[in-house]
Length: 138
Image (cartoon, helix red, strand yellow):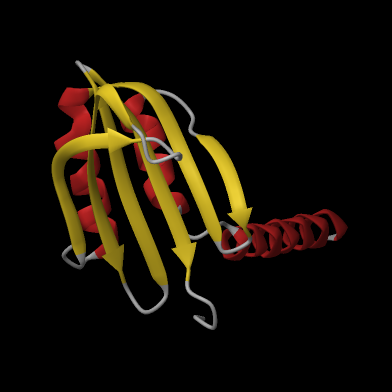
C-alpha cells in the first residue's frame, strides 16, 4: 500500500511540474520547435526583453520558405497584417547590402505578434522569427 501511495505522489508531482513547465514556455515556442525540426537545426535565441525574442537560423535552403511561412500561418490563424515582397536588404546602418534580399510577413493577434523575416543570399537564407508577447495580454 505504501508503494502505491508513493507512486501516486510521484505521478502527481510529475504532473504538477509538467504543467508548470508548459505554462512557463515562451510565447511561440511551438512554432520555434516546428522550425527547428523543419530546418534541421536549433535556432539561435536572442532575448531582447522578456516579451520580445528573436530566433535565427543561418544557411537555410531557400526552398523551405513556403513551408516555414505555412507553419506561422497555421499557428497564428490570421492573415499577415504586413507583407514585404522581395526587396533589397539594408543593414542596421541603412546601407544596401549587395547580393542580399529581404522578404517578410508580420502577424498580429491581441496577445501575440510574430514577424517572419527571410534574408536571401543566392540559394540560402537567414531566417528570423521575432515573437512579441503583447503587454497586458493574458
